[in-house]
Image (cartoon, rainbow, N blue to C red; front, side, top):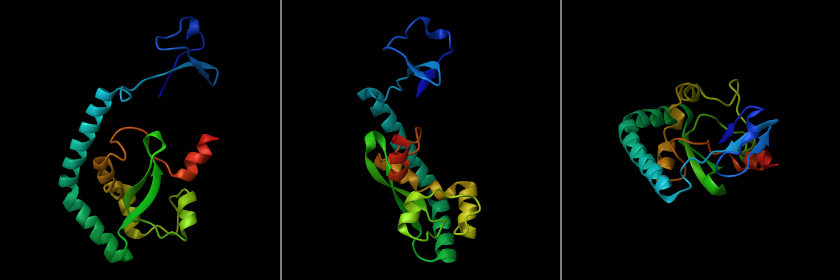
Length: 163
């Protein structure tokens, strides 16, 4: 995260190092506290507690969602996709299945749009209500991702964004 100050605000360098420039503005990287062991430990503990409570409370809703996907679209209720987490560590992100991909390569490299013909009726409802993302609580509990923070992206797009 960056703090972008005004064009004339660079008279003094903020504590913590020299500023960078983004789009012609002076910017200073902000520390979020998770780079310190105590800050990271507290955030991780909060994530684990919230995810565990969320999984218990959401279990009945998740069971209904899983049953709806199974009955409408057949086997394969959970969609698994490789994502890139903190420090570039890959992990498998879990979601309820909402699409029928044409092939593995396409699903790894393509963004989905609202009018995608592969979107099932149940999948449309799950996406509209964001219920398709409830299995990600398991990813949070495992420590693969956090409740708050940047969204993990697919390796193909991480490579594209890194250029």
